[in-house]
Length: 145
Image (cartoon, rainbow, N blue to C red):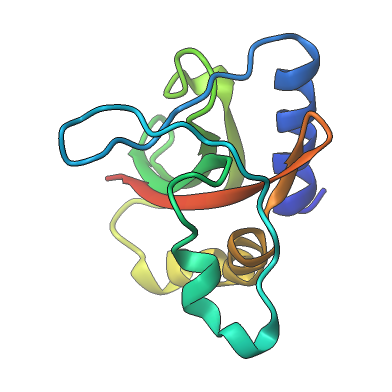
């Protein structure tokens, strides 16, 4: 399954189970900003900045992508997560994107593995996702080691 498909499947399951948690952006006084508008995919003419920075009143979801090193046997894992759930950092609440067995830092292998998914991440940020029948922007956050 693709990363895009896995994200959408996870969002559908969170919504259906009533486990989707709104994570509102905050203003300069740390007051939550109400999200009252659905996301609209920007036109090609608008450039990439429109997708990367939708107004704070646009409904959104937060996607993380990170690298986790360690384990037995030693490995480097690429994991994706959705912040819009209770306990988003629990292992069972993340999606395994790729694994690279490793006895030392193998940056070229990890970079290659991550590169396979960057186009999907870019498309998720540009096109958004559907949650509860409504389009939402995707805020992309890097996480991990």
